Length: 144
Image (cartoon, rainbow, N blue to C red; front, top):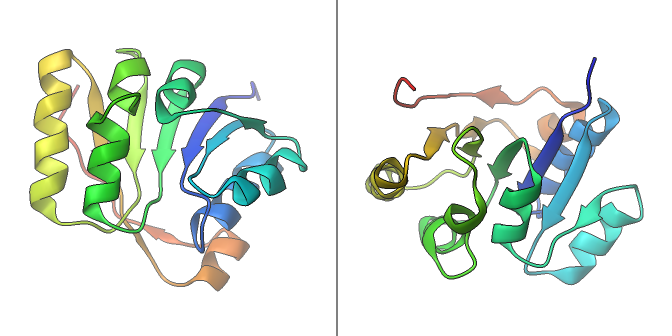
């Protein structure tokens, strides 16, 4: 298997164990979080730190966000130094946060105008499932 570089933004309650499982499967990980100690903990396990969401996107073959709420996802995706500024057209942004559909649509529409792609993929179950790698994923997006 060829290792993929996965960008992961949001290393909190659910994101940290999800990111660790990606590394355990042999993929390279580039991470960003507003909590520097969360980033440092993953770097200590072999991840690479990024200074911004834009830097994560520029370095990744796929970008995953797992953030607490919709405004956070929108800011990280579309704000200054955000994912949209670094995302290549051949790279997917997979948002695994549980947010309002209206925000997901807004991000998706903004991405489409730039030729970028968003997959909405909220997760089900608990942190224990995130640790075990047994979350339920509900993915949807436009045909590319």
